[in-house]
Image 1 (cartoon, rainbow, N blue to C red):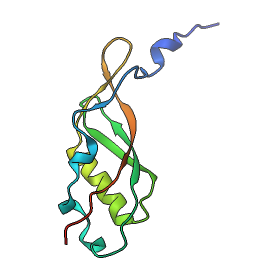
Image 2: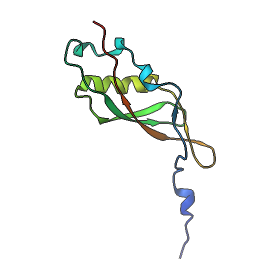
Image 3: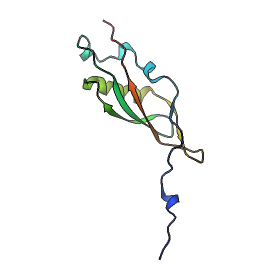
Image 4: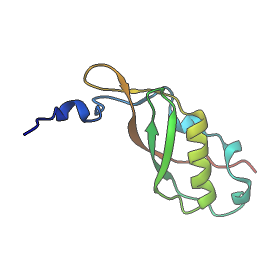
Length: 112
């Protein structure tokens, strides 16, 4: 019978982080509001799950709760991936690992 060292084969689970380097809501301005939605009924907030790599950058964005407008949901993820930076998650040994965090973004009202 063979024994296996299972602990060494498991991915390191994050014990802390990721932590945003800036307020995520501050990364979106009224000028970012999708042009296709200007003048329409305001949409609700967007809830997202951000996957943050060991480099502190968003590698994936998933919609947890839609704003009710696909263009706004898409813009939220596009902007989080391009603008958000994090102190990455760390494992029990202090190494940086992939982690995730949920956030709800209420868009500022568009100008005009």
